[in-house]
Length: 303
Image (cartoon, rainbow, N blue to C red; front, side):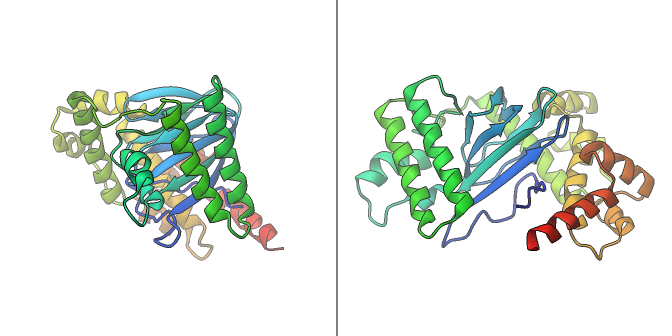
């Protein structure tokens, strides 16, 4: 299974398609490895921690997530994960369009369960632990979804949809659903400004990006902007730009015919030595080592 990271800010890749509107992914990180940069997508998402621990961010909230716990992310929410502790961690992720659950006709399920989820008036708890019986039930559904995605047996699509319906029913019955439609204006303003900056980085990462450019987008002074950005992402603007560029380089390194020097230029580095140094710091390997390990893994999967 390919567990290499595929990250961006506003993700433009599809998670499934109209016929099957969900995607499932496994992520694994070694000790001290960077986990997930700030990004968002229109789909909702469940993250289930299989091993280890990480500090999760959703919008402006931070909380630790440990093995056996899950996080729910509403569509449009900025989220990220940061290394926590000295051990590695692994996650399962289900990313799905909430319209996947919509009924063909406007029935009681649509009215009482799906529409409130779509409108964020009645959605899943942000952090799902194992402290209450209803939380354990939700976690059991998530692990069942994970197992169905892993085997992909005939009919698994219906099992996943069925588990999601049952989860909606349970949060309604146990009155643990959350109304997240009423974010305060200050928080919403911060999130919107952060999205503006990160979207600009995504669209211009292959070119030189000056701090003054980013600060002018909000607008703020450079000093205010640096403090704001770090308070929201736990990274400096340059650390974030480097991390985003390296994630794009990871994708390009999967193409064995691309020269590493060309990849460096394509993701915004005109100094190959600096590119290799930043890549090693982020990925704990050089670009050539990463490519070698990736190709070796792919060959083993085919045999």
